[in-house]
Image (cartoon, rainbow over all chains, first blue to last red; front, side, top):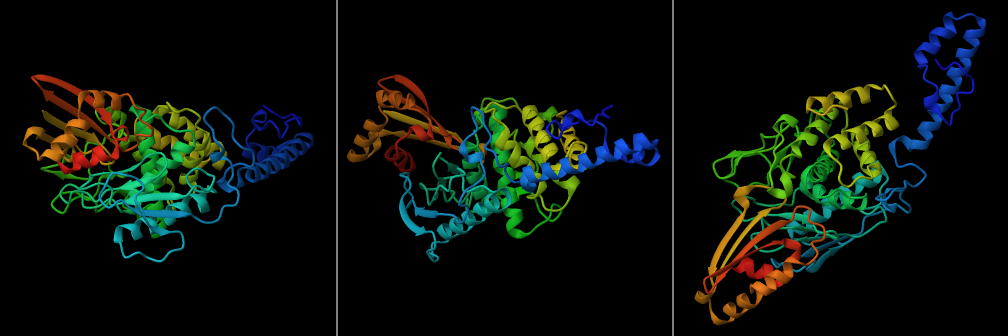
Amino acid sequence: MCFSLNCSHHHPIACIVPPYMLRVLALRGDPKTAEMARTLLKQTEKLRDERAEQTRAGLPPSEPITGAYATTAVSPAEGLCCPDRRIHDGQFKAALPGKLVRSEGDGPTGIADADTAYDAAGQVFALFAEEYGRNSLDGGGMPLVATVHHRRDYNNAFWNGTQMAYGTGDGKVFRTFLELSVIGHEMAHGVIQHSGGLIYENQSGALNESIADVFGSLALQRALGQEVHQADWLVGRGILGPGINGAALRSMKAPGTAYSDDLLGQDPQPWHMDHFVATGDDNGGVHINSGIPNHAFYLFCAYLGGRAWELPGRVWYRALQTLNNPMASFSDWADQTMDAAIELAGRGSIETVMLRRAWKLVGIAI
Amino acid sequence: MIIEIAAQGGFGGIKAANLRKTIDVSDQPEQMRQELAEAFGPDELARLSRQPCGDCADRLTYRITVTEDRETRSFTLREAQIPPDMLDLIDQM
């Protein structure tokens, strides 16, 4: 047991006597022991205050994070203010970015997709800026460039490394991609890229997809002011074609249930490692197995209640900043979220207990 | 010259949304025939398949098979490796 007064605030792990034990000792110990316990309690409180100051209530630390894959994007934002949105009309061609139709501060264009892309980009920017202190996708204020009406009958939306592009869908399988959780998903790919990246195949690719789903969903929940139990936890609600039997593309609350349709088949997402899908398609099932970490995030949020973009979102964001491993497995990521939760909520906190339970329920022990 | 194109992947990851097209170049108008022959020549497809892919998040993967003079060659191309003009041609097919 650490009763030494040399329990330096620079090495908090060196002091392992929990505060509740110190309080008992302060009350019941002999005069010498009680005095020592009171001194240690004061040190513990001072340490906690310093740690809270260092973590800036969940925002990035004051010192830049270093590492082979850590970029300036993970440092605290400077001059964080406003988005610089640039929305283009692809005019159903493949060339990017297309014709500029709305710049930052311009009024609505009357082109519904362009205006939706503009508004949604602002909401996603606000999530990262106001909640996590990040200045745009790269952390350095990069313009938010997007193209709507990309290609003809194009059943897709993507981030190409520098901008977002959205098809219109073919009207049969997809009717649109201009929906906030989808736009947040694509923009989050930009954040992931500039936070060190995750190789887009197998488990690291599924993590890339899952983290994009998480922040897409958080952008939507925050815009709607929804708490955990009010949100539907769907990704791409309403984007499937009019004849498709399905609510959305993916469900974080119940992976595998977003759609069940004669044309599309059954939503293939698993929620537990026992049902992990080994496949060479889809870059190793990146859009399938993302259901597992998606569900872990949902469970973590559901256990805590309240606003998912607050502490749970901060934990996932901080984990992404500090990951420093582009080939991370689900297990690596789970460990990283636990480290982030300990930093933000404290070791032994209810939040860390709930996080461990969430990962365990999807078959990942940490 | 027969061109078969199959695409998979993308944001949805839904197999039913996968694209499949087959085109007989000899049935096309002269200008289209010329554009297709240039864009989908095996040498050009081989060159494109060696191009850097860049960021591939949510992008499609194309499997292009060209049959000419009883010889069949197949190439796998990422969407980011295909020039915009060629993607427009695929959309027109």
